[in-house]
Structures are given as structure tokens and as C-alpha cells.
Length: 147
Image 1: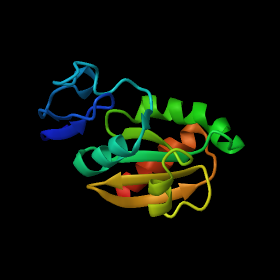
Image 2: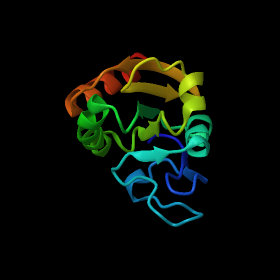
Image 3: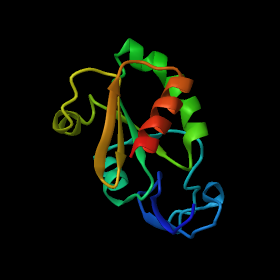
Image 4: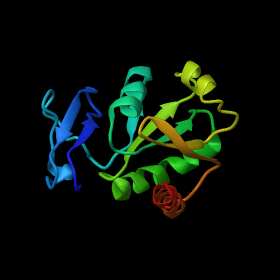
């Protein structure tokens, strides 16, 4: 990172500042003391989703899914694998559309799995359908390069 960045803790949702040049993978939350990045997607509820989108300087990739969705379950291991490769440049979260119906409705989700990339609090891109880890990584990197 070339500049200081705000990063939202995936555990307690506290906003942390990571200084420029500091290894983000080694950073811990000032509040709960847990790692800010651990290579696993964050299971987000409404509060966590809102805080990640609104307060993070790091782009946020959201996977909208549901437990009954076969393609969603099939993509879950690929999404987890992609997370390990995308962090700390991207925060990766999962949002259960059955549990968080108001957010799914507000986002206009018509099919799942759907991935949405946010940066600076705004939606930058979205794609629907199951993908491999390589496809998830490639799609995310293309969208960030285009921004």
C-alpha cells in the first residue's frame, strides 16, 4: 500500500488505519486484536456489510448467495480459494440473501450467486453465475484495473 488506508475489522467491524508501507497481512485490529486479514471470506450481516462498504478504503467483493442454492454451494470453495489470493488488496465477504433480504432487495439481486465489487462506497461491477477461483480472481483484477 502506498498510502494510509482504513480497513474494517472482519470480526468486530471496528475501523482501523493501516499505515502506508505496513504489511496489511500482519495487521491486527486495535479493538479486538484479531487479524484484519486471514485469507477467509467474511460472513456478513447487515451491520458488517454496511460498515465494510461505507468505511473501507479497500475494494470490497461481495458474494450474494443462499444455503439452498446448488451453484452457490459449488462455488463456495472457489470463492474461499480466491479470497486467499485477493487479500489484502480486496476485502472479500459473503452475504446470505435469505438472512439479509433487505440488502439483497436493495441491490436488485435477481439471481444467485451474484458477485458485486464495491470501491469507495459505490458499486463498480457485478456478475452472476458460478465461477472458478481463477475466474473470480481474473474478473476482480480486470474490474479494478478498469476503475
